[in-house]
Length: 264
Image (cartoon, rainbow, N blue to C red):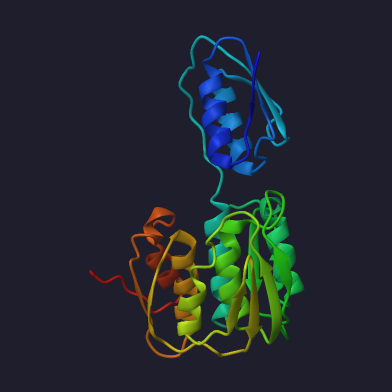
């Protein structure tokens, strides 16, 4: 028996895949509990792997000699779903995301409701639209089932438009506030204090400008802010965006956005 201590989603998934063909039993302790880990475990089991405990801090894998082929439908992208849900309220409209499990985003949806958004949950869909009045909220990013760090930048872009003060504590990744200067360039009022960002929200604060994406989720926050801004916003270095979103501009355009991709 070999034991590993793993924390991140990627580390948990890599070790889990390697252990499926290793001799003997492998135990992953302090394993990531994200739904994507459980989804991978279900897929590997369908291929013949022997895995137990996914979704808990301890995963046990009994190695097998080989795996077989399988047909499997991968779960929805939680972060893309959350990003698109914010696009509607930020522009004064509404967005419905289908083929998603709201339970996988419960902490995010609860915070949207607390901020004043009208969230309607269906069997396999969620609709988000701006409520009668918005209000600032405070939260900290946490491992699942807490608020996902990959939606922190997008949530910040939304909270800059909500009257009142919000405080965001980033506990997962360092340098996860690189989007703050760019949002401020668009008219936001955000101050960073170590691992905490203080957002002074004001409805209609965004004015179009040229901004630069610094990472994947930062680029998504800038696109959302650009949709809500008066005038034209140019987001540069969108190759970051393409790492996590497939043809995001086309999906937003189908919702009514005036957005085009230009060669840099």
